[in-house]
Image 1 (cartoon, rainbow, N blue to C red):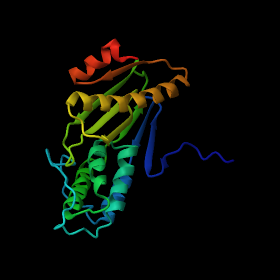
Image 2 (cartoon, rainbow, N blue to C red):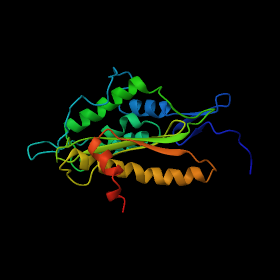
Image 3 (tube, one colour):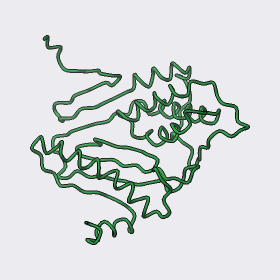
Image 4 (cartoon, rainbow, N blue to C red):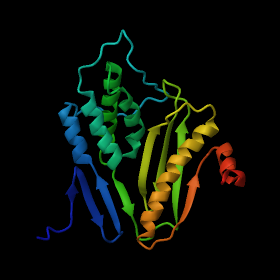
Length: 230
């Protein structure tokens, strides 16, 4: 088998290694440019956020005209981007994916807003590694309580270890009655990933401590109460 040298591009991701800083930078700028060109908005004016604050997307009603736009493909393009290198569009991608069956003009318009946001941020890169890794794996979780049209919450988390190594945004499967309940669900999602990452890192003979950050005092109190540890 021939040695083709260091990888520089794979699956739509540009890979740049800095040996002096011991980092790897992942970029999907070319992938974003391809999407912008495909939808004919490569010269569009950018916006500073992927969604308008407090915007609530709603499903199609009987009066709404179902868009003939290839919405499934559009959301799929965003999903690949948000999964690989762009956690900043993870929430809006998750929100848009609810309407694959009956997308409306509202949903298509929101998709195009995300593209305008990507136009202004396409040079952003995800940097991993560094000369000195942190002494701890640190996880953060939060949620958008009851914000969805069906009363369910969106929870999200990120896990840091020499950079952001994993993240996720997900609509919770049930309606939470209290913010504490919803925060516990979000923390559970995070801890499931922590357990997997911990096992992976230990295989490399690394033994960092684990820290989880949560901003809900009720959820923290329940986690620290030994009565709930059985």
